[in-house]
Image 1 (tube, rainbow, N blue to C red):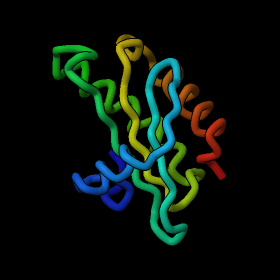
Image 2: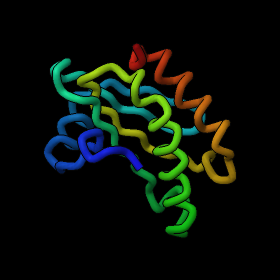
Image 3: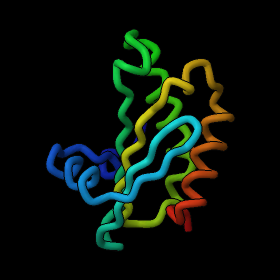
Image 4: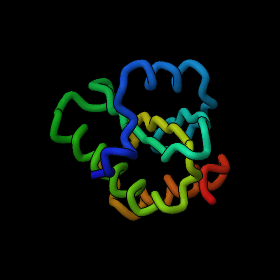
Amino acid sequence: MLPKKNRLGLRKEFAAVTRRGKRKQGSLFNLVYVFSSPQDPSQIAFVVAKKVDNRAVIRNRIRRLFSQAVYSLLPRIKPGARIIIFGKKEMIGKKSGEVGGEVERVFEGEGLLI
């Protein structure tokens, strides 16, 4: 689980990121991000819709996989980044290593890592 300071929680912050953010599509997830003040810590949110899978167990597992992948990258993520990760159906059945590699590849390609 991410530390509280690194979670994007407020509805208005979430809406601001989705409205103003840049979008990137990966093979396992879609990414929306925006940069704010470099003094702020980076904040991340994970969204997995019922459209991906109707079972809460599966959706929660996908969120945990994303959380684990991002947690390992947290020291390398640029400060002030606000990121929302939307899980796709392709995430079902993936292993931790596959998800971690894909998250790192997409983050690096978008310039989110130091």
